[in-house]
Amino acid sequence: MKGKGFGILVTFCMMFLFWLLLSGIFDTLHLTAGLICSAIVALISHDMIIKGDEEKILSKSFKLAIYIPWELWQIVLANLDVAYRVLHPKMPIDPLIIEFDTTLRSDLALVTLANSITLTPGTITIGITNGRFCVHAIAKEPAEALTVDGTMQQKVADVYMEW
Amino acid sequence: MLEIIVSAFLAVGIFFMLVGAVGLLRFPDFYTRLHATGKCDTLGEVLIIVGLLLYHLFHYPETPLVCVKLLFLILFIFITNPTATYALMRSAYKTGVKPWKLGDERQ
Image 1 (tube, helix red, strand yellow):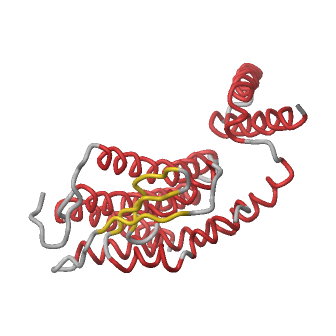
Image 2: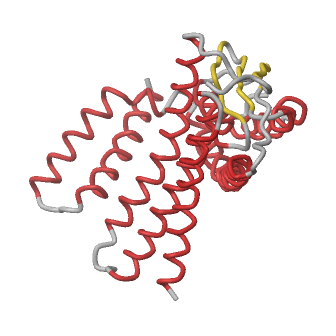
């Protein structure tokens, strides 16, 4: 019960801050409307954002903040990689579909890894069933970077503390 | 100086959008085309928005909330673009679109 109240409060604050930044009007009418809307949203959907274990949220957010710059750099590399393959006269592609298992189980961790795979060089997530990933790779090297090397799985597992 | 930096951001963004479009035309099948659009559109759009953000920040500093809204746009593009790519890939795979292999005909 205590965790639920905490979740509602955090969601409410986030939603109200979002409202203030988007509206930018600070008279009584708009503030009241914002308060009411944020309260309704927080009551209905608090469990989508904050789930149970509130002790770890701070350290997880901190680790996520370290993970994101690395991910941004990977996105730049991914774009250069695709640009090279698109603009090369012979188009050096050799697509294949690979599958591999991860130890991750929570929804948020799986979504983070799936979106990271899609944004990093040469690979796109096709499907996830019970932590088993199905990935389309555009050539052999990016597929091997994912299955053999596994740096990204390690990093996402570190962020969400699920080994 | 500001104009040069903003133009550089816009130019690189447009270059990546263009690469995405060329890839859409050149790549042989549905999955590989999504590689081109899913990645290049994300970075292209984000670079263009960063260019607009810098321009607005230095030319119209009296309305900083516009910059905040542009930052939100960047955040949502980073979440929704790979998710939409994933949804397209999954639905194509489930309905049995055959992946192209080296040596096949273009689809």
